[in-house]
Structure formats: structure tokens, C-alpha cells
Amino acid sequence: MARMLSGLLSIALAIVPSPQEPTPVPPPPQPENTWSELILAGGRVWTGDGGDWAEGLPVGARYGRIEIGAARHRGAVVVELPKGAFVMPGVQDAHGHLLGLGSSLAELDLVGTRAFAEVVDAVRARAAELPKGTWIVGRGWDQNDWAETAMPHHDALSRAVPDHPVWLTRIDGHAGLANQLALRAARITRDSVAPSGGEILFDEAGEPTGVLVDAAMAAVPEPALDDAALRSRLLAAQRQCLSHGLTCVHDMGVSARVLDAMVALHAEGAWRLRTYVMLSPGERELIRRGPWQTADGLIVVRGVKAYADGALGSRGAALLEPYSDRQNTRGLVSLPKGAILALAQLCADNGMQLATHAIGDAANRTVLDAYAAVEVEGGLAARRFRVEHAQVIAADDFARFRDLGVLPSMQPTHLTSDMPWAPQRLGPERVLRAYAWRSFHELGVTVPFGSDFPVESVDPRRGFYAAVTTRGLDGGAPLRPDQVLTRERTLRAFTHDAAYAMFADSRLGTIAVGRRADLTVWDRDLLTCPPAQLLQAKVLLTVVDGRIVFDGR
Ligand SMILES: [Zn+2]
Image 1 (cartoon, rainbow, N blue to C red):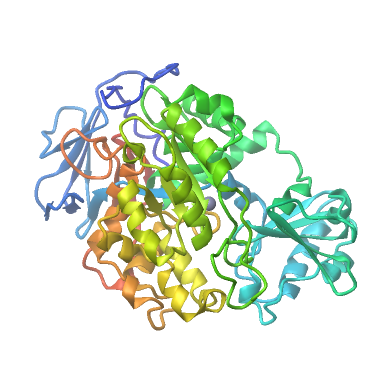
Image 2 (image 1 turned 90 degrees about the horizontal axis):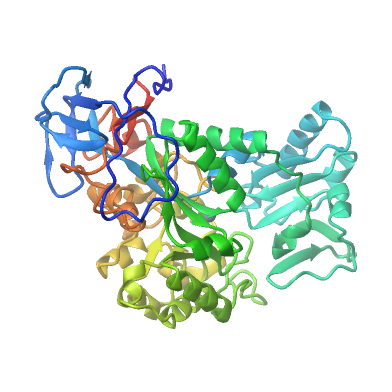
């Protein structure tokens, strides 16, 4: 039975600030500084650092830091691991959306629907439970999974659900479908003009189809989220992450309000997930404040997340050449070079890291051009600026990541989710320059891995499997054998390389004496089990700062 153990095991942590960490201000109320020790005995330990040893010395934690061959002091919590257990550095997700995950759990889940009619049925069923006029919000549809792969039209939806405003975002979050009432609330008519960086789709009669892309989506007034719902969504997301073995998430595009809620939960002792916060670009005041963290270093604010384009699925990704399956468009560019440069300079001046979403090769080039123009003392590479997704890269631009010291932050499950249709969007040659993490590795570029949850599953086993096989979940032929990675390389991308991307590679991401004791324990050896078994591996323990935060034994 899986359960949270945090309340049952009274392991309090002493806080030992590390010299490399940014100055903590202001300290939250501290838990009792009592002596603390956790010892994991048995199991194979993969250090992530070139070394690994089997069934040998126990790995332990004192005061939240790793000890190896730890002595068993009185009062230590000793966990005898079952035979075959596999201990590794805590798994990180270098790109996720915690509130989005919490919200997706609260909203109508349309992932995996096989036809638009299924979507309509799901919304109709939800509407039957809710008073008229209540918003119904859902997410996760993907017309590429339907027999009819054209973008949907709100007609059938509005007929089935005439009394509730409905807003259903696409799987990638870059397009949404509004019903008639939601279109009315958004004041979208046949005469509407899309804002720059957005698109309103119209049918042959000139009426809006209900589909809004990128910047046009902002017109839909989503129902406000009260503080209690915000907190419960964050906690629901945390539970999901910890139960899937994640010890740290890089949370993308966080507002001041969400950060406040998270810090308040932390002060109450309810936030246990290590969180690297990347602010929304609109949070200028917080950006100017520079790096900041809670006294125990569990929540670190040091990054900013911006968007340069949309997504490939909705043809919002900015390409250098037209889409192969729609010759009249190259997608959208939502943020021009000047705007990226201004934000990048603001980040550089305030000691902050910038991560910019760029999917198309045009967007990636624009971001690289902007980053290259940033004036920064000590050189740009020291700032570890990132490009999120880095999906389609012009042949000449791969090496520029290396030369500029820019990190492509990638998501292996995007490859397996997109590959059934990406070749049509990109054409047979361009697709070879897409989802190309191995091409980056061959140049010596560090590529942190994540999932982009809730766009993809929060479950890191899916990412491991995608990276080492490039196969879909249903098996089949490898979709991109040229990009297959070794087990070690894959696990390192989810640990050390993710830690590097948050300036924490000296504290996290490997098992070594003195590092923070963030560990994930599985029931089987992820380095040697057959590939399909990666998907069956069970999380036995999730440990953050020496404390068991999830027990799946
Ligand atoms: Zn994202």
C-alpha cells in the first residue's frame, strides 16, 4: 500500500546551509533541529557518477546529507531494502507545471479520447452534474488521435452543452476549443481579429469554429481560482510527483501568487518536494529581486520562463521553412528577438537564469541570436541559459548551443507522442533535425530531461522508456533509432544534468558523501532490466533531504 509516511516517521531535519547556495531571505519557521538519520541497507546503489556498487555499503543520510557506509547511531531509522532494490540519485523533472498538474487532476481529463464525439459525451456528462452557467474546463484532447484529424468545430459541443460555458485546451496547451457560451464570454465573433502571436479559426461560413490558438486563447475568461483551491491543487500535484519518485521539479512559469502559496505551504511543513521555480516573465519585481530560496534550500527561485513560439501539433511552432503539410504557414512567432533580448538582459543583470520555450527551428534561432547578444560579466555560459524543448534545430545551430553554453532542456516523451504525426508537419529531412538529443550529446552539450507534465505524464518511467527505446508505449518499431540513449545516459539526464540546469550539480544529482540526500529507490535495477520492465518498475521510496516523503513498499 502506498502512503505518505512523513507524519509517521518523526525524522526532523537540521538545516545546514551550503556556501554555494544563494543568500536565504527571509527564513521560514524551522522544524525542530533534532538529530536525524536514515539508513538504507541492501540494494544496488547507482551513484550516477561513474561509480556504482552492488549489495555493499548502506547509503545513509545525516542531517539531510548523504553518508556512505553510515554507522548506525542510536535512534537511526534503518530501512532494510528488499532484494533487487535499486537506489539512485533523486529523479528530477527539469520541466513541469505543478499548478497545471494539480488543475489537470481537477479538470475534465480528455487525454486519450479517440473521437471528438467522445469529448462531447464527456462534457455532456460533466454538465449534467453542474448548475447551469458553471464553467466546464477540460484539457488533453489531441485531434491527431482521432479518426478525423481536422481541428474540431464547436457545433456539436454547443448543441450538446448549450447552458454551460466550456473551454477545452488541447494536449499541448497551445490551442483550445470554446463552445458558443464561452465564445460569447470571450467576445469572439465573425468580425474578431486575432491578436499578434495568436490565431482564431473560422469556418467556411466565416464563423469562428471555437478553436483559438496561442495568444488568442487569452480572450477566454477562465473561472478564478480561490486560495483554498490553489493550495489543494498544488498539494495534489506534489503528491503525484513524490509518488512517482520525483524528488525535484523545475516548475515553469510560476506567478507571484503561486509562489506565495507554495512558500506558505513550506512554512507550514506541508511542502516536501524540492522545487526550482522559474517565474513568469511578467513578474518583474520578483525578477529584479534576484535569486532567492527558503532557508533549507528546498524552494529555490532563480529562473524565468518565457515563450518564443507555440507548438508543432497546432502548427504554432515557428519554422524557417513552411510546414510540409500546410505550405502557406511557417507558424507563429510570439516573442521577437528584441523582446527576448530585453528579458534576457534583465535576467542577466539580476543574476537570474532565463529559459525560453522554443520548438520550431526559427524560434530556436531567434532565441540563440538574442542570447548571443546579452552582455554579461563572466560570459553567458556561466548563466546556464536554457531553451525549453529545443525540438527542431537548424543544422548550423546545434553547435551554437555548445559555443554559447546554452542548455537544450528536452522531454523524451514528446518524441514518442509526436512521432506518429511529426514527419508530416516537418517532412522527411527536417524531422531528422528534430528531437535530436543524441546529436546534442555528441557535441558535448548537457541536455536536462523532463516531461512537461501535464502535457505529458508526470511518470518518469515513461521518459526513461522513451529515451532508451524511442518506441511508443504499445511497443512497435523504434520511431527514432538514431536518438536511442543508453540507460546510464538517460538516468543521468534526469539526475545530474537536471541538477546542472538549476546550478545544483555540486549538491544534487549524484550519490556522494556530503550531497543532499535526495534519493529514489525502485524495486528493480533500472540499468539492467529488460526495456519493457522500465514501465513496470515500482517506486519503493522517495527521499528528499534525508526524509522519506513517499513510501511505496
Ligand atoms: Zn511546458
